[in-house]
Image 1: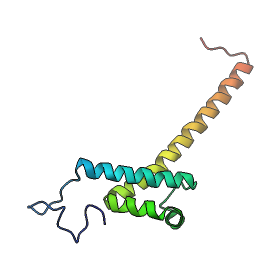
Image 2 (image 1 turned 90 degrees about the vertical axis):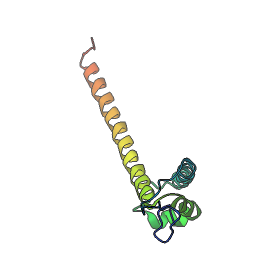
Image 3 (image 1 turned 45 degrees about the vertical axis):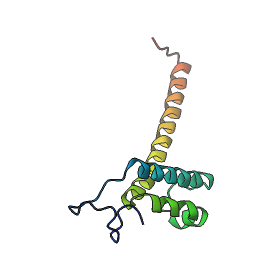
Length: 114
């Protein structure tokens, strides 16, 4: 379980609220995330939410450590953020190529930048 397991009182403050993870816990989570994402990269898996079955098959040990080291909400957030950043980067790459093609076309028509 993650930090916020309902069956454990170790992360509860005296008033019943949850205690935020400390620096060491956050670092452990980030390291587990990076290891898991590295495994996904090595296996050409971008979306581990939609491709959960394949991700668990190929990166089972890494995903188990990631899920054990991070709060459930963080796991969900990092998985979704990975896909969003991939899509963003692909869009930027496509726009740059389109802009380069447009500039090349304009230059071939005699246009010059001033």
